[in-house]
Image 1: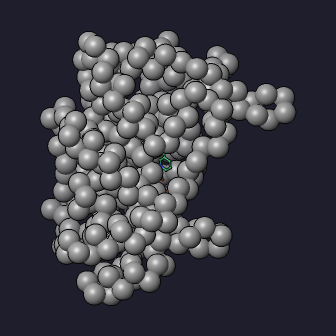
Image 2 (image 1 turned 45 degrees about the vertical axis):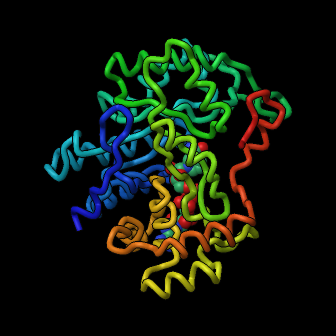
Length: 318
Ligand SMILES: NC(=O)c1ccc[n+]([C@@H]2O[C@H](COP(=O)([O-])OP(=O)(O)OC[C@H]3O[C@@H](n4cnc5c(N)ncnc54)[C@H](OP(=O)(O)O)[C@@H]3O)[C@@H](O)[C@H]2O)c1
């Protein structure tokens, strides 16, 4: 089991990142603490959080417990967190990471990601989602080149091992790569990705440019009682799962991984946690990968539209 759990991909920094990480969005308080302890016990070594998830402190506490008990060492773990949209201004970048590090009780993170290309106004009081009196989010334009340069300094100062971006389009990633004196290229692009949204050209582009893609919502973010399509209930996925004697979730994670994409499924259920990391003892036949992409990719469902940012000049999801 241990070797399965440690399967890694190499970043353009030379560092290794476990292919399967744990998503932690919407898990707060003691639940976050318990979740991380259980995840480390289950073999997870890659944890994805964000300042806006408001769980960094509890994640930090859980990590410290496991280090104190000798279960893991800091260097065994790969921790990523994210720069909030309200902190895209160059002067806000370092204070924001320092705040996350303090919450996480860490000296460095392994990956610091710009959470989104569309900025929000920085009110200077730590407000993460500043709004107008009538509740509309206050959009703000920032110079992303300046933001990136501030991110690069964090690497030079040893506060993060690698830097990357989330929710950037192919064009936006290419703009970053074209910064004339770029010192640290993005190591990771984290975007929504699953069979309903295969984003093949983006995966190809990142591969050509040495950027690892991480799929968020890799299971299609199932909400059993909602009105959204349920990827893991699709007959095609269930049929393939039956053939390989695996669960639908494992098939979908494997579909991502076989395309060279890393995954950060979120679950609070211990059994699912084990299932989601236990995906290295089978391989989908190429025709099964293609059938999933071709059949379900046509549906082109995107769960995270960030509709509040539609009027922002940096709003472009593809
Ligand atoms: N960068 C960004 O802008 C961004 C945006 C969204 C998400 N993310 C990251 O990506 C992570 C994952 O995304 P997500 O939570 O939207 O979607 P997801 O991981 O695709 O799906 C999570 C849902 O699937 C259920 N689930 C997990 N494992 C399962 C299994 N084996 N069988 C059946 N159901 C299962 C979970 O329920 P239970 O918990 O009840 O098991 C939860 O409701 C987040 O937690 C966050 O870390 C990043």
